[in-house]
Length: 82
Image (cartoon, rainbow, N blue to C red; front, side):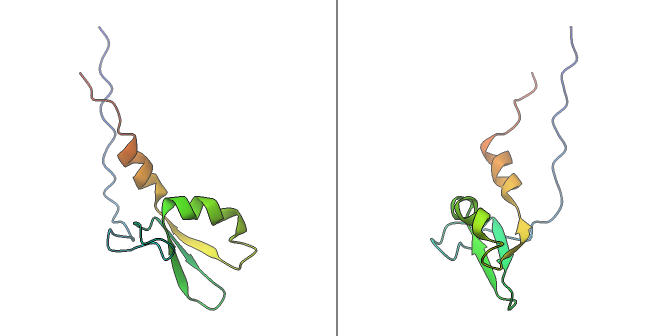
C-alpha cells in the first residue's frame, strides 16, 4: 500500500489582478499587465497576451504582472487523492 500524495498547498498570495480587470483588447478577464515606456498600463487576457508576448519588447512593453499560472491551475486541478 502506498501513501497518497497530499494535495498541494493552496497559494494564499493575494492576486494583483481580479475578475474586474479586463483585457483592453477583448474585455475577457486579464491575466497579464504591461507598462509602456510612458508608464501607461495595458491589461491582457491569456489569449491575447500569449499571441502578442513576443512583440512586447519591440513595442516597449514590460510585463509587470503575469498571473497565468492561476488560470492553468484552475483548468488543470490536481487529481483527488483517494
